[in-house]
Each structure stands twice: as structure tokens, then as C-alpha cells.
Image (cartoon, rainbow, N blue to C red; front, side, top):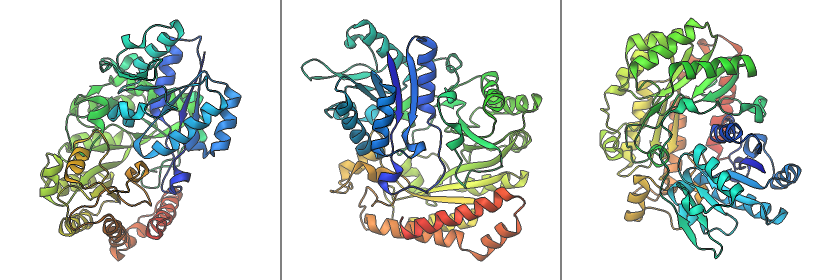
Length: 474
């Protein structure tokens, strides 16, 4: 049996190319590695159409070269139309190709997804064990109804949804992602996260988040649970990436890197004990800050910390169920700056209850915090989230809405028309926020005088080009 994992193209077809770096599809690399380990007789390949910038015609050529029996495609909501196009072309190559989709969208809307004629099976939630069990069932021709965590069509085309599969208890039991199946040289961190001249990569040290913010997909994929990899397992992967692939810079995708204080300290100390020369970026909450931990993080190579501030309005934060006090933002940024780690902030415009006044509060807070970089996203109510259900119930979703409009970084109209804040106005306010933040004389002076390396010069140039594209809408 031949299995091809496929990361669909999206940027070129949504007019988004050039809005940042290119990240290795960790989800597919994990599932491919697990399948290869459990079933060594199965031929496994990964095709990153997005990373390689492939056209539909080029995808067809690549698939013909591989000749897969099964194509497994990751399906994020914004790429829905592109995935359907790929599926249609795959079925034209051979109607015998079985198409399996997984990821956020089918996990949130399984039965609706399976109504698409060219999709055969959907994997719900965490994919490694479920997909491997699916391959086993297909090889042995056993009843799919006995599997947990899938949605499928029977011989008469009727859709069946099975109960969710349990989450993997021991993340250390998973092999490292199959990076050897991917063209690592094409992956590059965006200018907001690029911190060195080292070859960059990405990884996770945990899965899940204990919070239930209304807009977040974490609970859809991982439920409201957090599972940690062991310190040894995490640092072993870092060392493996260094020695085998030459990766020296990492973007940790954990929802909340510093949630377990002692574990964070132990990871940093183990990196130092092994004398691993790396640079890394992570995401944390403003209420998970301690100076001694920050000092250890810096000593272990942490160059930048990213915060999801989301809003400058406590009312909006409360509606999001963010469960954080607004004043903690300033304290957190000051603490990180004090130890000499760079900072980044994210804000979202267009949440439930948003007004021009609350957006003004967000812009003002962003400028006051003065993080090294700052991003202003348009809020996206992804299916499966509480945000989506509220927006749908209140009739805020645009009547002409398309799934591609759910992309956080896009030139398309935002998904919502809020009372007093139509989608067109949100885009205007987003551009205004970027102008106000990045075109401040004090900010520009600080950046120019703070240049210490060629990487910083390149980041400034690429950042300026990115700002120009956002301003021009393309």
C-alpha cells in the first residue's frame, strides 16, 4: 500500500503569497512518522504543495509519479475550496484513490465535510493512532464502524460518524516528525519570528490548553486537556534536529509554553547542559511570567516571546473568556524586556461586542506596550468554536461568506458584519493600526539604532515589504 500525505496549496489561490514565512506541516510529519513506525511495509510520502508553491497541474504530476492508494489531506477551514479542487483532480487521475481528510475543519464539521462527493473518509481530532487503525482496517477489510474517531460513507453513500477516539496519553510514545520526507530548505520563519542566521524549524513540546477562549480551536482538536512531552524527549528532538538536519532555530508552537514552571526550567537547563547552540521563539500568556524562568529561557537561547494580548478592552477580553486582567499585559512586557528578550504582540479586531472605541483601545495599548513586533489580525470564528456559534446565532456571518474568508491573514473581506462595524470597516481599521504602530518616528528610530546583525537588516526590509502588501491589499 502507498500512502501520500498532502498539504494543500492555499496562498497563491487566495492572494496571500508573501505574507510571511513557510512552516513545515508538523501534523502530517507526525502522522507519517507514526504510520511508518507501526507499519514499515506501507510506503509513505509527504507532498507539501503549499510550501513548494505547486499549481494544481503540478500536483497532478506529482501524484501520478507516486501512484498512491490513499491520499491523506490536512483540511484547515480557509483551504476548503482548494482541498476540494485537489480531491476532484485526484479522482480524475484514478477513481480508486481513497481520499482521507483530517484536521480542524472535518473535526468541527464532520458530516458536512463528508457530503462532498470526492471525500471518502474523515479523521476526527488527533490523527496518529486513528489513521494507523484506519489503514489497518482497510488492509484487512474490516468494518469501519468498529473504528473510533472517523466519519465515513458506506456502500450506499450513507454517512456514519463514530465516537471520538481517546487522546494519546503518552506523547513520548510518538516518533519524532518525519522531517526526512520533506524539503527542509524551503522552510523559513517570517520576519516577525526570524531571530538568527541559523536554519529554522518548528516543533511542539505539548498539546492542548487548559483555557477555553471562545475563538480558539485547541479545544476542538485536543479537548480541554494539556499533555506534556518529557524534558528528555523534547531536548532529544532538538539535538536530533541539530545533528541530522542542521536546524538551529526553533519556533515552538505550544499554546502555552511556560504553563508548567518546573518543566520549563528543566527544559532550559537540559539545553544548556548539553551545550546546544540554538535560538528559539515561543508563545506564553501574560499571567505566566516569572523573572527567574525568563532568565533561564534567555540563557537557553530564547530570543523572543510572543503574547496574545488580543484586545485593549477588558470587556472584550471577558467576552472572549480570556480570563486575564488587562493590566497584566504591561507588567509582562516590562519583565521580558528587562531580561533582554525581544517581545511580540498579537491583537484581534472584530470580536463579539467590538466597537470602534474598543479597537481604538487596542491600538493605543499596542503602542503603549511597544513590543518589537506587533500583528493586528481580523478575528475569525472558526467552525467548532463558541465564537462561531455565537456569530451564527446572532446573524453576524456575512451572507456571501466563503470558507477562504476565515483566514487570519488575508486580502479577503472578514467573515463578520458586526453591529456598527461592517467587514469593510474592519479592514480599514486593521490597516490604520499597522500604520499607526509601525510608522511612529520613535519606533523607527529605535529599530534603526538597534540593528546589530544582517538578520535584523533583512527582517526590517522584509517587514517593510509585508507592511506595504498589507496596506495595498495584495
